Image (tube, rainbow, N blue to C red; front, side):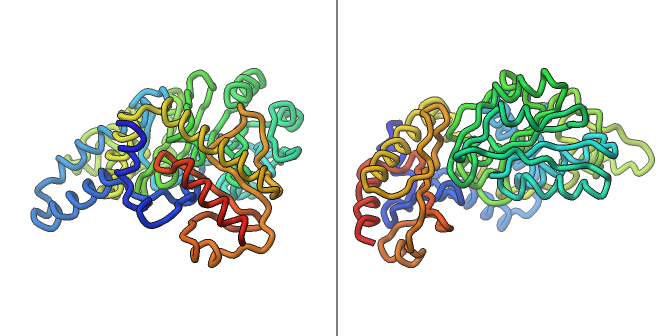
Length: 368
């Protein structure tokens, strides 16, 4: 498929200038079809297709593993990023005086679970960003002999700065520190190799750049941590349908963290989304999205607004933000533009967007 054909898979583009993948991506036709099929099957057959649904979901696990260059056995299916990050806090053995290094520009989902560890005597150390950048040199200053974990977003949600995963992963390995990555603002459009980047844990929500339903996502856990089981449920065992309440054998894969029934519809939708991403190729998607975001960056700079995403090419992502001078959400909606508005306006194009749409949006912004 070329990108014109891909665009036709997203009905939303016929109605809106949609630049909000960083918040919630729109559904593609393959995802809609997968959701519709599941709802009709459940309506018409009840439990009859239960096994078939779960077999289909396993395709998604394999695609998720391939996307980040991991083993299928290292992938657990989760509802959202917060679930994955909380799993990290449960899996690691914490001692009073330990600390976690985070960024002062990170999303609360990647902060609050570690602040919750303060009751165990664990400290949270904030890396001070400089001009919107989070650099390995600044992270290194915060690491000391008591640092157990560095937890960072691959791409910052506000300004779109993309950290150097491999540089920071090597730093963590050198210092003997575990490394967790929140990939919710990168995975689906940015190439990620957890082995090369020496990542120990990765959490991602499916409903942003992965083009998947709410309630879907996945968690990568390095195989050496699989013997740690801070949670356990009836689906964590090798033969869950034996219903043996005396004897059981825990799964030797990350599936052990899926303690009960999944949101089957959401994950079937994620399978369809991951199949679409896989069919296009993550390398081609990254190239396309970076081309769009760079084009948008240039147009906003020409407009004369205060852009906060003026980063070097290697640190750019699909997020471009500029300081908001009084534009409201209603202003954008009246002009059929969907974007995130805070103290800045965040635009996040995906594979369904075009340069022409960017030009239309910038022309509208010029008049507001």
